[in-house]
Amino acid sequence: MSIRLVAIDLDYTLLNNKLEIPDAARDAIQAAVKRGTTITLASGRMYRSTVRFAEELGLDVPLITYNGAMTKSSRSRQLYHHLPVPFDLALDVIRYAKQEGIHINIYLDDNLYVEKLSPEAIGYATRSGVEATPVGDLTEFLKADPTKLLFVADEKVIDKHIPVVKERFGDKLNVVRSMPIYIEVTNKGVSKGTALKSLAAQLGIPREEVLAIGDSENDLDMIEYAGTGVAVANAVDIVRDRANYVTAHPNGRGVAEALDRFVL
Image (cartoon, rainbow, N blue to C red; front, side, top):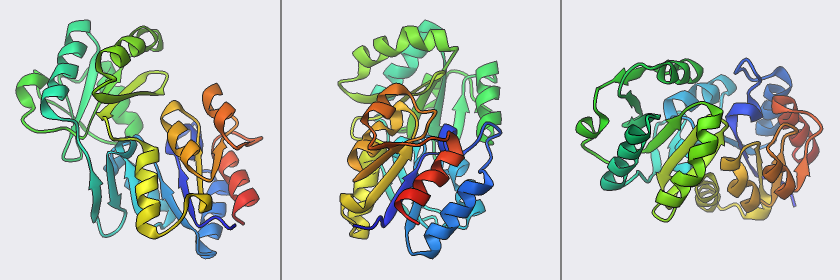
């Protein structure tokens, strides 16, 4: 059975260490699109931080962003899906971060808001290519359901707090470690896998004809949902263990390898 839909993670999967799309991956994606395969990007990033890569690749597709909380077209900007964090729960998460002295991002209307321009805020904004807006006390600023919240801290700090955050909020919210220095918090019904399943249904594509490629814990459920789940060589162990195939090459070269093997 041929692959008709491919979902590709961005950071540490499609993008290299310079946060660029390698030529081999670009060529393979464009060849797959020419064959009629739908290629989408599935990222924990904001929509505005994801869409520029879709535009660079010439993709006209619904993009899975915010870890699956928002699916939105790369060209028409049509909103297919948005499931934000309930307001009261968002406030609880923000208060926890403040109590523990951990930096937290909040995302509202595809804008990034922070308490202050801390090193964590500046580093995140630089990496993502977006502007961080300092607003002071986030509990006072927030007036609506945010799309996502993100803890940003040193890896050892995240090591300490990820089990606590999961224990405290995991029954009401989706909590996942997307990178060594990030904890993502979204609506309980949100994940890349759920968003990919919904997109495949909208396109009339069965899961057997879906390929997902990723590296991190937040890619795991879409890799398990897809008929063919691929981990790039640099993926974390749990993703490598549960994928159908592990590439010999890391990052974008691994994406090119997967497309060559399963699509082209």
